[in-house]
Amino acid sequence: MYKKILAPMDGSELSECSLPHIKAIAGGCHVPEVVLLHVIEPLRQAGWMEGYYDDAVLNKMKKEAEQRIQDDLTKLADSLNSEGITTRTVITHGMPANEILDYAGKNNVDLIIISTHGSSGIVRWALGSVADRVLRHSQAPVLVIAPKACRIS
Image (cartoon, rainbow, N blue to C red):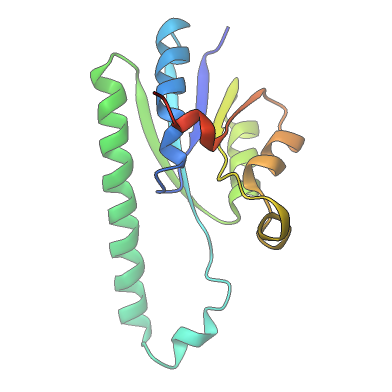
């Protein structure tokens, strides 16, 4: 049924709450490929840094950050691969919900498994919800893992 699962990861512990679900579904359904996707958001107020750092320093900082992200994704992928789940990593740049939806649409994703941070009220209104936007606009089915799902006793 599922041939490709997309699992957005943002580097937080909460985003990793989806891993047990990914393992269960990918392993149980013999999914040929899992993609761990990290979206690097543009700095919303990049202008504040321009007065403090020159372009060479900013570029070095960006490359170092991207390398840390790649290292973290690789560790997660290695964990899944060690359990027989073929996993690869992808890093894109842009607005997270847009990039997730775009990647899923262009790459024949059959299922998106995404964790939510569980924000509500004013925080959710102010920051928006990536998981909510993905859920509402995805052409593929979406499994949303809520923070309570992380509390496995």
